[in-house]
Length: 119
Image 1 (cartoon, rainbow, N blue to C red):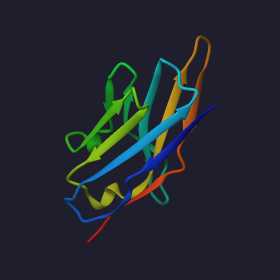
Image 2: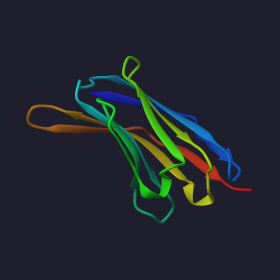
Image 3: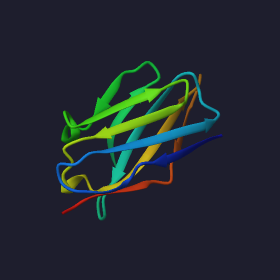
């Protein structure tokens, strides 16, 4: 079992910046992906950004050039630096850990942190 604890959400003005953190503990496979998903009211949950244990990254088209995902493997922590925030970025952001094993993968989720971009 693994646990994810998120922090860094809040209210910011358009054009502002915010940094999200997610610390994982418990059982973490040496081969894993960590990432951020978001869900706005009335919308489906969508991938924002992900990063593998090897450092390969993947971003949603809507955030490319504005958001940067990174991780500290020693601390089992993933970060999301969000710049040039837009009102459409408003959502609950969820941290995700995907552990890979020989014959299966397991997903773990944080409880979510609210990001609101508004004047």
